[in-house]
Length: 432
Image (cartoon, rainbow, N blue to C red; front, side, top):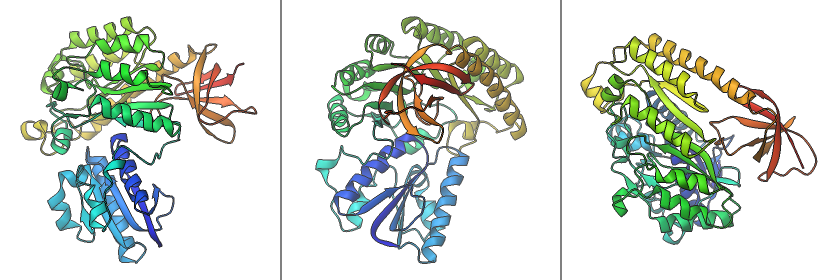
């Protein structure tokens, strides 16, 4: 056990990661040595930032906490604190079930941890973070919360109402991060589409991105987690006209049949969904769309699933993920529908959908052979440098495996010619 050392473990999404990075900065400012997701837990203080979105994520969080309570019993750590979405959602239950944890914090009151340790939260550092990603990219969280009422989703229960950050505060944060060497920004929120409506009384995503794109040193901005209904089409002009705004949009569509869209309370129709994608691709030629789809929601018939399959075949998403419905307590679905679709049927539908997507992805990757793209290098491995194009977000999208040569630096961008491809990887060589 190392005295005055804090180990922070982040579970769940990149939005949680931003919170952990902000907490790390406060610990560092108060004289602690702090490490993120260490290979070996050896700090006297451990903080777990939990996820509470779906069953598997909750289980992972609980297992991690149980492992650490055991370590505390054995004297390997002195204090254990838990924060994040799981404790925001189940605060009282966790206090009763896990008394070994020194204190639970929710998603928004984690700043109290600093004062509880007898230290001072430093407001002048509120926009600063200890970056845990490779130093050339970072996540930029532009809002908290969600005002949508999707039937299956527990996020509004956890995070509350939508709260946009001001454009000015985001500009200041980006300038600070550029000063630390960050070149690439993954712009994130539970819902990008709604940005600005609460504080500016208008959709302001386009204005925000346009202003961020003008900041010197910002080489890539990439947009994550749009909502399809009432989509802010003016952001497409910003993507099209700014070379440093990636031709990429992550927009979770979930389903396509009118029956399921209604049951899931998505506020959009099948035809409107097709029209949305058509317009995005017309206004930003070459854009790569990432989406997430759900199978097995209560009420999904075989006919609904077939419509979803046909949708995937029709649209040929450049990037696509899918998951099976999880019956989350407190949600509209939990209260109003029976989770009647067997787990094996959900899994079969999920597997079938992803097999189709894998074939599509392989064809799209093969079509890139012979083309040259700007690629940012993320890391070096034994046989290759590993990088990404503007069409690829870290952790979730394909990578480019680059033939090794002298002089290549992590975090730099190079022109790379694609010479071979697999479904989810490209192989390339740097060209002069």
